[in-house]
Image (cartoon, rainbow, N blue to C red; front, side, top):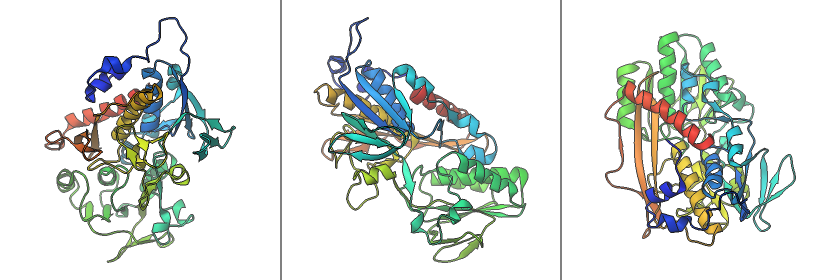
Length: 427
C-alpha cells in the first residue's frame, strides 16, 4: 500500500475533475501556508490516524490538525490474535505515532472527555479545552458488559474480552499458558454487528493452533449468539475440520446470557458450560465519547453519517469514522474500512473548508485477512460505491469475494497487508 496522493484517491473514487478539485489547496513553493482552519481528531486508530495524516498531506499544510490519543503507542487489533497463538509478540504489532509529527500533525497524548457541539470545543483530561472548526471522532467501540448477567467489574478482572489489543491480549495469552492440558477455552461471540466480524473465529483458530503445539488434549468451544459464522463461514469451517478436528467445537445460536467468574462458567439458554479460560465478548456500541456527545442515531448503538463526507447526521461539522458508524449495507467494522473512512473524510473536509462540495461518487474498499494457522490465511474483500438514490455506499456487483482456500501465500499477503497499512496510516 504505497502512499496515495489526494489526486489519486479522488480519481480512484470516481472524481471527474481531480485537477480542479485540487485548486485552492496548492501553495507556492517557499511561501508559508496560512491555515484555513483547525481540525481536531479524537482517536488515533486506523480511522483517526489516517485522517490526521492525510488532512495534512492533501491540504499541503493549510489545515491545522490535532490528534488526541490516550495511548502512547498504536497497538493493532488486526493481527493481535497471533499473540494468542504464540507466533507474534505485542511488540511486533506496536507502532509509534512519532512520524505523524513530520507531517505537521500535533499529536497530544490526552483523553477527550466531552464535546461542546454549540461552542465547537473539545474538553480534555490533562490540558485546557481546544476549539475546532471541524471535528473528527474515531472512538472505536465500547463494551456493554451490563448486557450479560454477572459480567461486573470484578468478573472483568478474570473474564477477558481482549478485543482492544494491549495488556488484555497479553493477559489472555498468560491464561492460556497457565491452563492445564485437557482444559477448555470458551469463546463467547456477541450478536452482529460487532467489531471485526471474522475476529472471534480467527481467534479460535489461533488458540487451537497453540493447543496443538503445547496442550494437545485441550479444547476450544465457540458459543456464537449468531445462527452461523458471520464471516467466511465455509473457509473457517474447512480449517476447523482439516486442522483442528476434535479441538474446536462450534455452537451457533448460543448466546452467552450470564457468567460466573468464581465457578468459571457461562450460561446460555440451553446449557451451563464450564471452562478453564473464559473469553467472552460483550455486545458492542460506539465509543463513549460519541454517546455522550449525542452522536448516536436514535434507537441504535451507532453513529449515522453522510457517506459523501463521513459527517454526522445528527451534528453538522462533526465527522465519525470506523467501527462507531452505523454501517452501510454489507460494510464490516474493520481496520481497513476505517482507514478508507479516514481518507474519505480527509478529502471531503478539505473540499468543505475551501467552500466546495465533496466528491459526489466516492468508492472505497475493504480486505480482511484471517490467520487460520501460523502461516495459512484466508481473506474476504469488497468494494463499496456511493449510490445517490439510496444515499449510502453499496457493494459493487462482481467486485467482492473470498479466498478459494487457505494458503501460505495468502499468509505472506496478510502480514504484508498489516505492515503496509500501518505505514500508510502512521509512516
